[in-house]
Image (cartoon, rainbow, N blue to C red; front, side):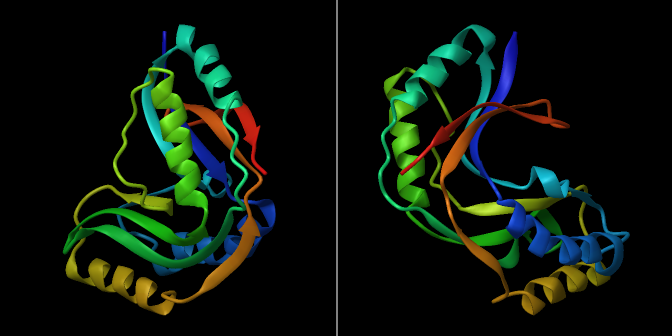
Amino acid sequence: MMKRCFISIDLPIDIRNCLASDFCYWRDGKLMGLPIGWVELEKLHMTLVFLGDVGEDRIEKLVSCLEKLRFKKKIECELKGVGYFGEGSDLKVLYMGVVEKGLSELSKAVGSRISGCSFEFDDKPLSVHVTIGRFKRSLNKPGQMKINDLVRENNNRSWGKWQVSSFGLYESDKKEYKIIREFFVK
């Protein structure tokens, strides 16, 4: 049986708590009625590597491979700003920006490690962000204006800084994320 897997970093509880009221205001107020599938607050994360479907029989090999990773650099992140992927009325993803130091290097180290263990993955360059919603369809002009206002109003806003101490191997059925194993850094 195949499992949809990814390697990511969860947002710390204090960052989620700082974000909670704004997130609820956007979802239930400012952007209510727009065709956005919102990510649940407790599921917000930063994907380092998307693996796709991995056979259950290969999960233990993947875990063993990641356990051998030695990453000693300090990793610092700041959740800052709001943006989107897509253009015009055809927006795809609403996200929060991440200012990082060391995260890109960790992503490369993880990718190199799992590649050396014969795992294939989506190796496009890392665009560090936290997806908060996915657009279900194109937006009309008033909807586009609301999104642009949100981005402009929160362009330089920070919801906090933290030092990353771990990352996780997760499986997903698109509705639920389940951690398979947590790996600690530094």
